[in-house]
Length: 230
Image: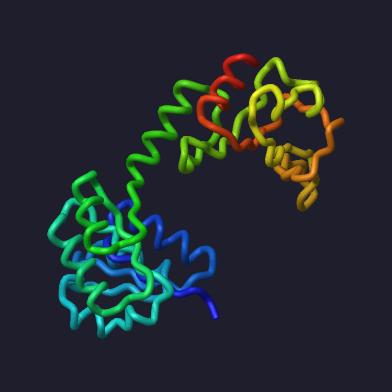
């Protein structure tokens, strides 16, 4: 059986999450009080319903307690966000993920007992800042204790060097998780460049100019690695 999710609030964020879940094979229930937003997503998901999510009876009628998780993606309507979350808690939904637009909202959701709170604007802001400061940075996932998993376009000074020569661990206190590498392949009779992950590279593997290095380490060590090898 496919995973079952409900997404409440179909602004840009909720709409994108609902569509991507459905594309990956999940059964998605999309909910918003605005009928126009519901109409926009109805052909992309299993079910799309226009209702007031602060109404416990209306929510219960949609069997939200049967969902593997419910995402509350309500944006500017703070009262709607909090009341909807309270109703889901009262109904006993097993996994609730809520979007917070501010530290105050995050604090209130935490006090309500919501264990998973998202702040997508903050995460995107961190990523964009890192990409602006470090043009080699392709992706950035912040982790606790100032660690991150980062995708870095191979800096100039490490190109053509082997993994052993670069000395990721000894020289920079970084763990090389994988290398994302482009290969020329023929697909449907047409030449294409397809990315593959090298997850078990040996120490003699040489880094190519188009490689993307996926590393785990403290943020300052990632930045030092990029800075010293520009």
